[in-house]
Image 1: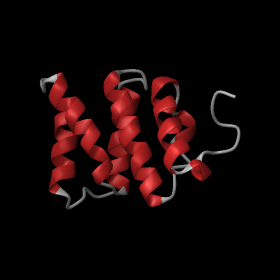
Image 2 (image 1 turned 90 degrees about the vertical axis):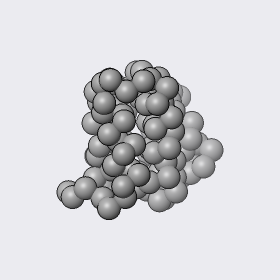
Image 3 (image 1 turned 120 degrees about the horizontal axis):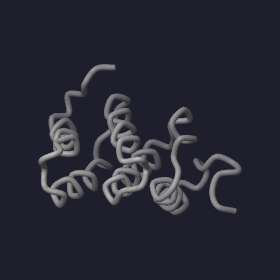
Length: 111
C-alpha cells in the first residue's frame, strides 16, 4: 500500500504519530482526518486507534473521523470494524447511526 499524494493527510498523520506534539495539535489533526481518504490513510488511522487501545480522547476523535470517511464513501472496513470497542466503537456507531445507519453491521452495538 503506497503513501498517498495527499500531502495534508501525510502531515496530519505525522502530527498524530509525533509523541512530542502538543495534545491540542493532535486533537485538531484527528478532527481533520475526515476530509481525506485512501486505503493507506485508513490503515494508518487503524494503527493509531490500536496504539491508543480505542480508549483515549485522541482515539475517540480518530474514530469519529474514520466513521465520517466511511459514511462519505458508503462503506466500512469489514476487517477492521470488529476490532473496534469501547469509546472508539461508540463514536463510530454514533456517527454512522446519524449519517449512514445502513453501514452498521447487524448485531453491532449495545442492544
